[in-house]
Length: 186
Image (cartoon, rainbow, N blue to C red; front, side, top):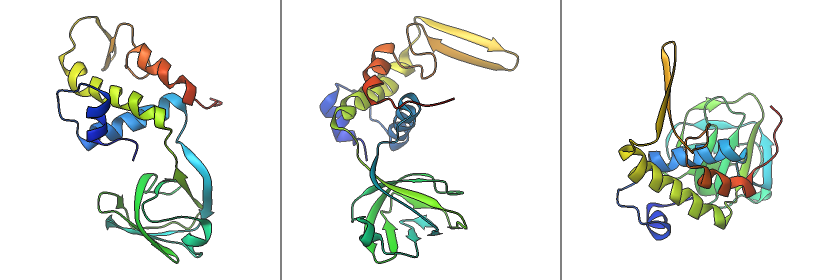
């Protein structure tokens, strides 16, 4: 997990109480802004069987431990039908990975190659992420000044003047993420 509510309080003077949904939203925004999912070189590709529910399991035909996966790891899953994203491991035993109760798996027999990578969050990212959460909790809901609205047909969008046009965070926060950006081809 990139950030806990206690760490947000350490890095900012946040007055509101952040929810896990707000923290998860900031992580998704960081992924989009940086084109980086912060995965390590500890990565495997395998067919997998996901058993659904809170604290679900992921079964592969090999042994997780042989690849270096351990209890407590955070993994990023990609190329599945329903289980892409960050999950936290509770236990790893032979071919079964059990997730913590806050990580949910959706029942799925993949039938295709799924990628599992251990996540390594850089320490410097925590402070930026904490500032983004604090902005979402304390500033964004009360922001009236310097707002520009755009309407196109039935769609409308509101942006803060001086903010990044894709994420709607202050440009200074987005600029701080530039050291974590990976090149992409669009």
